[in-house]
Amino acid sequence: MYRRLGQIGLHARRPVRCVPLTAIHCRLRLAWSREHALWTSQQWACVMFSDKSKFSLQSDSRRIFIWRAPGTRYHQENIIEQHRYGGAGVLVWGGIILGSRIDLHVQIGTMTSQIYRDVILEQHLRLFRGAMCAQFVFMDDNARPQHANIVSECLQSEDNTRMDWPAFSPDLNPVEHVWDMLGRRVAARQPPPTCLPELRRALLFEWCHEGPSAGQPKKRSAGQASAGQPQGRRSVVSLGFLFDPSTISAAF
Image (tube, rainbow, N blue to C red; front, side, top):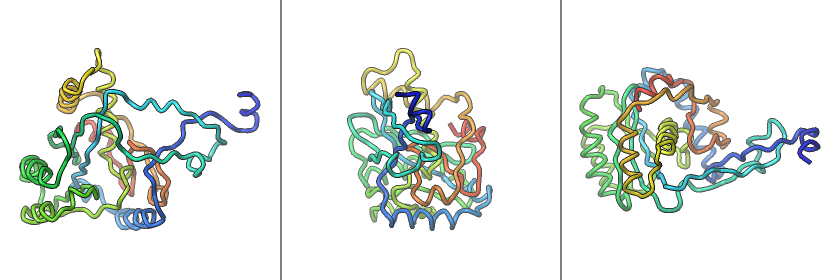
């Protein structure tokens, strides 16, 4: 059977995974990509990309294969839509900027707008912001706690410029590549973490210690990224600029 399927151009491949996107999401992603496609490396160097991520003791092996023809990776029938988080684990928040990174925060319980302001902004971002240039831009996604009034007022009072960000666009955020590195390092530990406190310690340790190069991030066209063609949950998008892999490693 495998041989016959191969003869007609069908091969076993892992399906693409993405968050569910509507036509409105795709239009907003396209508009954002076009707006930022001509940004210079100097402009991107002033942007801190931040995000949260959830790590669990049991990783998703993704051992699901589909039979598809070459060049059909992003066809709708070959994509599995899934929301980002599920199950018990450890929620972390972090941020990267060209050549550096902010301290990793491990959140116990739900991330509320009050915690986001009091801990993330006033304890982590404020200290880091003082060493940045006047053109500093802070990127966070559209999660509800991060766009509460008390959060917006805090950012404005500290004279922080916030980057407009299209909803449901984790694949446009370079920090996703760092989460992938972090997850791989924790998974490679011997012995691996067996409980949530061990997982928390492992995440903090690996975040604070430099390791091997992240390798060359994958590049995508702005049109592909914004038109709703996903590249998986943890990836790096190129929108007229390229993150130097050595810089990604330095930030990690």
